[in-house]
Image 1 (spheres, rainbow, N blue to C red):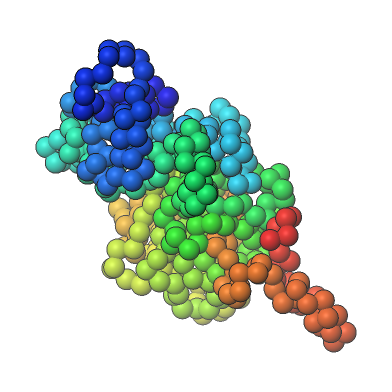
Image 2 (image 1 turned 30 degrees about the horizontal axis):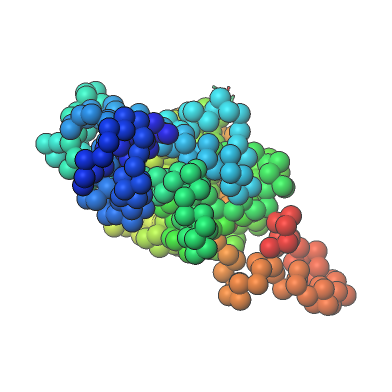
Length: 402
Ligand SMILES: *[C@@H]1O[C@H](CO)[C@@H](O)[C@H](O)[C@H]1NC(C)=O
Ligand SMILES: *[C@@H]1O[C@H](CO)[C@@H](O)[C@H](O)[C@H]1NC(C)=O
């Protein structure tokens, strides 16, 4: 990425002929380059980014753009880790970082169109020829590319560090990771997938993820799952099946136990492994979310998308089993089958509440009244309600007091 940044700066044409400086970048080139990448629109960035993909050519193959995307994502992970800006997320086994980086890079170029305007699909996709207008279109439709470049420049090169209002990264590439026992909890998600899923959340929810349920911590029980996730505001649900497939969904509204569909068009499903992708609302029906427990008449379990007995994502009320049905796509989210087999066995589940708690309008910390008010707690204890309330609400375990 350093070489690419250098190539991008060198490619800026100079107004005046300067003495032949073969390897050095002059100040004018540096400034024009930074301004294009940090402030420019897709059109203004496209020429520079094309030179970062290939220093010499006017057209490039899709495979070169994929390599650039891999360098870009890998550099973001490196920079955030080096600058200790992982926000509490665990960097897992370093050998495993590369598979997450490749998955995100592949997903970033899925939107790429060749120079002839066609999608680069199929076996020859990586041979497709792309020109500057392909790059411009790509930058326009995949905002993560510009966001990642900005992180590398700001946090990697520490450019703009001295400007107080710009020094802080407002992009929230990674949310603050809360409730994960001081980083000792290893999530099913890796850094690239957290960054990618977070980029699809409403911007006001991107700053913080709070672990509210993990089957490995709270037990493999549907009652536990229900008890921990209801009334917690928008949540990201992540599942791993016994075949190693990782996938999940974003619930844009608080989960409620009831025999009706709930949620709104902000919900989406996603796949993390073997490939990374997000599947958004199609408009076909409103079967966004479903959570039911202990009912005789209606199915018990947690579902997203599709219909009863045919969910895009389903965890059975008996826990341990689920399904992801799509022939070939789930109606609500246009998602393919997310699990390795249609009927799957669960390996692990985790749920993250995103953003601040819905009740928390003061911004003074996301604690329940019971945490904030020991007197209320003591009163409840006196009337014997304490246990019951504790069951409804897991004490906030941020470990850092906010
Ligand atoms: C990645 O991590 C998983 C455990 O999370 C492990 O089973 C697997 O072997 C690792 N892959 C590589 C390439 O190290
Ligand atoms: C999945 O389970 C359903 C109902 O239990 C069954 O009808 C269906 O055939 C199963 N699918 C596969 C692929 O085994």
